[in-house]
Length: 241
Image 1: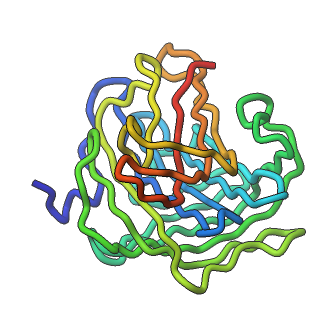
Image 2: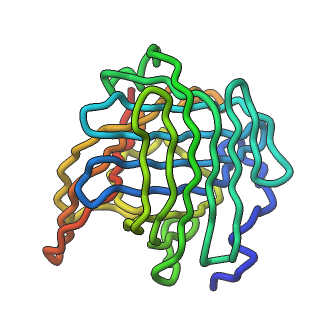
């Protein structure tokens, strides 16, 4: 049974692959853009990922697995400041970021050297619940309405005045990226869904606790559910490098 306190941090486990993560996603209805952000806390480090994808524009990637573990939800690093704010448990979260992303003309470079132009990015988005949370593996997910904006130096940015559909989840426990491969949509296995990737925006997971690198492929996609309903959202494929 979920409780409001579950929104917040849990006592870390002792397993070297234990992690707790808060993830946030949004995709424009016309697939002109998509974004996601994720804060992960491990026993030794905090991770921050944020990605913005837009049609006919470079992938904007921020990825750091070596941040100090914060007391709350605010993390800082070289050219990176990010903060999560829970305005109302199980109802509304805000995600803020200021820093530099690497602009990748080829999204596949996210799994390699990540070489591209250093681009200043600032965003502030809110995820407000449109449904009750539901159980997923090691946590829960929730569908949301998303508003906010992103300022991107050298381009027009992203402005979301009318809410778009989004998703967030919160997980905690042992996260083994290496034993199994998977395909997921909104945190759940996508066994019967038809997925058409449109805007690629994956990340590379660096070696952890003796395990090698791992490639997490993600894309803002058209998704046709088993019941025939068509929607947009983020899909992910956990694959070996």
